[in-house]
Image 1 (spheres, rainbow, N blue to C red):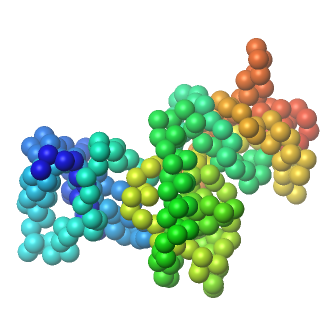
Image 2: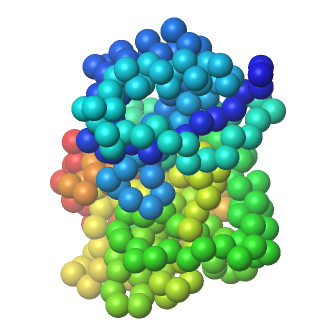
Length: 296
């Protein structure tokens, strides 16, 4: 009875604001009255529904569900069934459920990053190796590979852009988001390591809910204030130089603005002994890039 468990149910996207309340007032009141914690996360298969997780003891969860039902009377909200979608299982200690599925680079400060993938010298993916959630990534990789290698896991029927799934590459299984679908093929983006890949739809597998608790670790970024030296795009030499400067070491990144698609522009610095290499400037100085207007 005193074990901490997690109870999950589905909630339509348009009703999440009512549950949360202004500035989180209603979910905070549930926490204060019942001691149960309510968190809303992305649904792995559809953007129109969210997963509501209640963390607490059985008695705390029961009280929290009563308060949620009071917020959504059956007569007015028949679509809010509160039906449990996960199997209740005790957890040894409370595992924080992330407020957002995506781990973002912090605004206004420099942070430690590593290059995890690159599309080209100006379009990259960064991980935060000193973030508290980062050590859990290797364990997630192991669990996913063991699960999808041995079990007959369900495929993804009719995938649409935005859904999260499991994808096999290089002998392992990783979390990915569907970007585009074309006939029997789809383009996916790997949310923990970055990069894009086109794969057969038949190779997609449904992601388990317990594989969705760790925030997505790869932050997609553009290199700030630089562009290719000519209209032909980034040259292989520019890409090689960037990889040589950035690969396999901890860098310092800071956000200087955002593109229209919401992806941040970053400055990257490489600490080398007592000196610092400004990677953006190094590409310009070596003739592989040119400055653009300053992003604010």
